[in-house]
Amino acid sequence: MSDAAEMLGRGDRIELTFPARDDLVVLARLVSSAVSARAGFDIEELEDLRLAVGELCLLAMQGSDARSGALCLELTMHEDAIGVVCTLERASAADVPTPEAAEIARLSEQILDALVDEHGRESLDGSVRAWLRKQRGVHDA
Image (tube, rainbow, N blue to C red; front, top):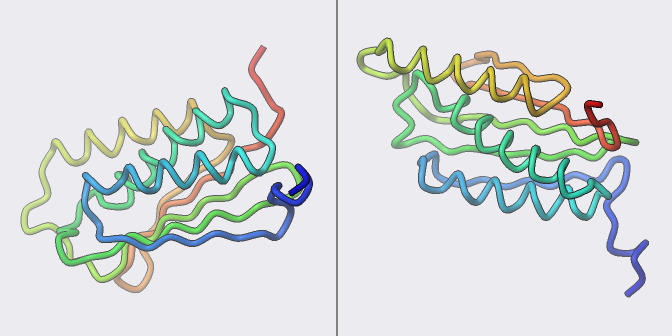
């Protein structure tokens, strides 16, 4: 198989759905590493994206009782970037919001600020959606 046949390009989309558990976030990290490598990201960008996707999943689960929920991860290839959307589905709000949860969410957002070009989080129809966009070939000098 040629290198061109193994690469992912604009419009390609990968989806992964798994139970919303902290210990399974590693699945999202592994998939994002493999996808970013196939999309032509260098090792530094790949590592940034791998870490960012883990934080994105944790951010999506913040403030909820995710024990019965599922995380749906969608990676979409653009011309020179990857877009990642993590949606927490079928989870209820946490019984008692804690100050620690707000601090953890703030820390996740700071980590995302350092690793990706854009990110956000929103609640829609009982689901939480967190997203990011990571540009390929853009390094801080």
